[in-house]
Length: 131
Image 1: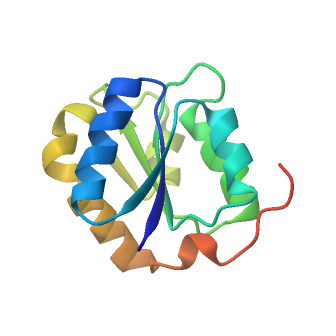
Image 2: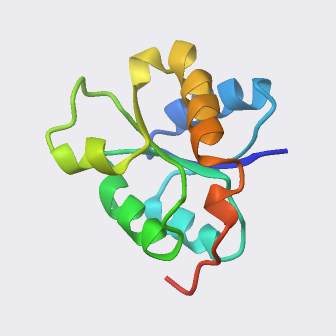
């Protein structure tokens, strides 16, 4: 089963996205802080990260940079409640972007597209050193 890390500081959103992905036969670990997600990356091999852009402890872009410093091929999807990210680096550095309002319709499709393009093992191909 493909294991996905889902990071969103809103537990209701995280639960909804987890339910959507679990129904699509993915295994999902949910984190409500970037720090907890990073700690888990040390011991768990994820095929992909899906993260909110705006989080209080570590924002989605910083999380992406920290994870990709150790796993440069890690598939990464940003989700946001805002129509367009203000920071162009967000769009350029992630593999996909999904609006939260569109997630029930688009999230699973984007996950499948990104995993097909990058490979299901891309995120697990390099071990994370201590972050």
